[in-house]
Length: 466
Image 1: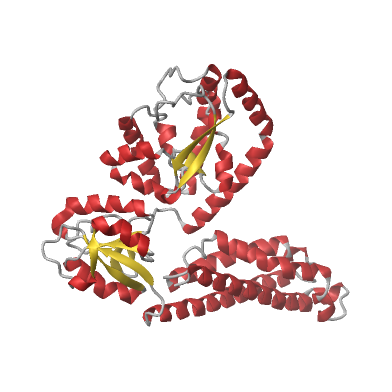
Image 2: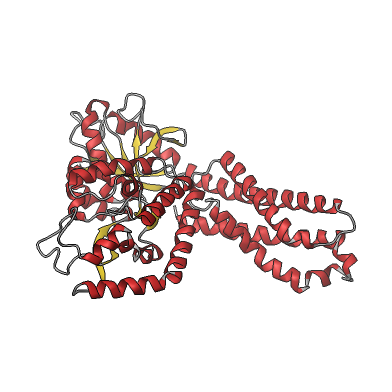
């Protein structure tokens, strides 16, 4: 399955539909309004600059609106009911906005004409959009049903659960590349020819095969081993799903099933698709505004850092971010230049390595503001779990392997853990703070992001950053 091609198909179709419906609406506007405004024919009206400008801009408006609705995020496996509801709500919002911004400028002979135009536009836009999308969705569903389109999956497990996986997954668009023994199964139920190796062979298999997703099919008798195995899979940066029937240790997990079969998503979060896109846009807009409007503050801090001690203005360090990818984080330097010459060390209270000016920056969290550049580059977000060094991650996961779940979201300049717990100067304290970040991960929403930002502003203004 080609995800990009499917998205392009939806976008192109929505664009054409929006353009055609806007053209038809303008024909209606001519017959109800424009012919009384001096246009001798419908052709002259459609060729006027005002109409031509709308014909160009309105379809782009719809594509932007559909993007922010989250419709294009998951082009496969769409529910017809969800598609109907999503299209209805989005079209209602779009038509209402266009009506008040564009159409309300018309001067009809009777205000009743406004109702005619509004409801006609809504009916045409909704019907044409939903029907065209249904055709594309139906075509994809037929391809999947005929097994012409499929996602490549590697199944972890070779017992009775794996046998059920082998029977069900191909029905919902998956192609099984092979099975991997989790070394917990006493008696394999899968044919030896289909077993590609053991868990120890995963790095080699994922490196040599085109693996789109990993499916874990544990046996109920190995609860503890299965949970440990799940946590170890996060590092492969692939979507992980779990086959969880009623006798499975994961059955009670509060997650959604997929396509009506007991397949749960272990690497998904509760953020809505629309929320994800809106969050991304807010991140970029705020980053640009902050970097532009507060450039004098950056200059002042840069001079202060340079005068406080010898060394560079910025502190650069590799951190692990979204999907486990390393990136370079930027901060204003708050320590003396040779502070970590003997290796990574967490900052302690009254740390002698911190300069006097650096203590001021840390108190008001001003040392973090260069990370708005990381947001602009796509490495970070305004709100999200704080990124850590690989050195500390390796130590955290020994006691809290579920830490890898946090790599499913972009790290943030501020986080629920930093707001409610603050800085941590030991690995044990980092694990305590992790509880707050996990709480954020399980309850992600724009409302929670705004709440965290309000708390962060309060901390900055009151100087409680240390």
